[in-house]
Image (cartoon, rainbow, N blue to C red; front, side, top):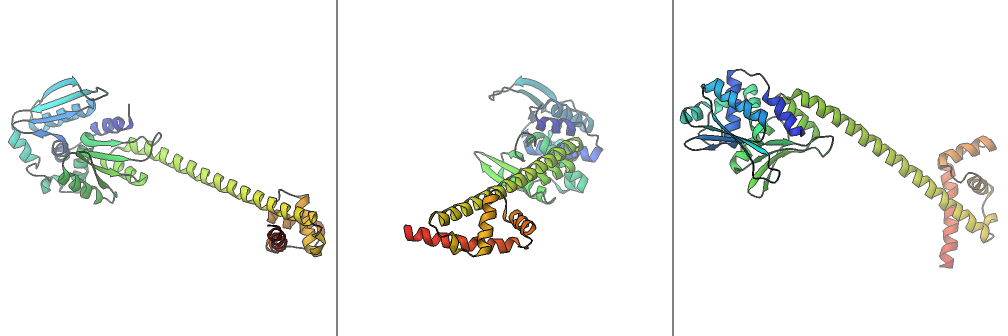
Length: 304
């Protein structure tokens, strides 16, 4: 079962009062139903189909006609088609559906707004499993004005959602991991939140560890490169019989670099300080090697 199906399965089993049932069903029908002389709702999710059936039965005491058939899409999933043929006008009125936006009473308070969004997600939403993919939650809609309405509704909860026109549809999407977790919490998918946050924390920790390891490796690479360059400079001076041009302190630095070719400047400064009894800082050692580097550069420039 996909993570999307798991989330929808959890949402479809939530207990609700009469008003939240109405708001949730309004979100379901408003965002996905084909409305004419009848109301036709199609879903691939068995749990969501049962939820819709029970909502209609509980609110209107109507048993919608159910047709189950295999879809024509490439994966040929089963489609659950619910059709309501009676009380259509009355149902649309009580669900606040007579224009592109729901009536105010459907979203009269925070709990009702969340129920409405829950209904929309069950019909049009999908979410990537954080364990196997990037963070992404989206709603696929075929109406531009409704897409922007939904986007504005989501952003009332500071979810940073955006709208993308794709082919003939409109995608309202959320990319930030924290905001996706907030949405799941908001619509009542608390088991999914626990799973999602566990994976998110693990991935963030793993990414931080990788960044630290990469940073440490980069530091090691820089230390090795610096030490190799210093060794090359020293070898050049000796090869040209110019080593004696260095003062005593610079010659000491060269001797210790040759003795400890893998040491960092900090490590080398501590070794020299300990073994010679003459304290030298990392900065002081850097300046000595910088003078050696300048002399080696002059030699190379003359030869080029």
